[in-house]
Image (tube, rainbow, N blue to C red; front, side, top):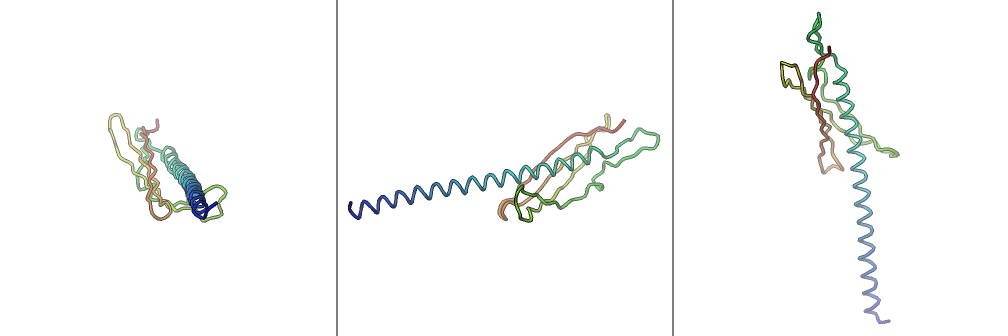
Length: 135
């Protein structure tokens, strides 16, 4: 073997190894982002469930309306990764409640979970639902 053949073989092996390592890092990053997205979705869905359980009964003898935005202020939560010993990623839950129709009475509930991925990319998970009053 000549020295040129050895250098070319080392270059090919180095390029192959670099490709394998970069693919592995990409897969790890994608898996972590997917886990955080799932955790953010769960937190947003939790807030949707809180709005669904709020009393909104305008037709009762004593009308009650707990489905207002002031009852659901912005909330700072932690998105935990399973099996991780880190402090998690901080996220903000924002809830918007808007009237869509008065006859029949309907409201739109929109929840955003806003978080930062590795300090460089802002991600927003959003969920919307329509709510009718309680009977």
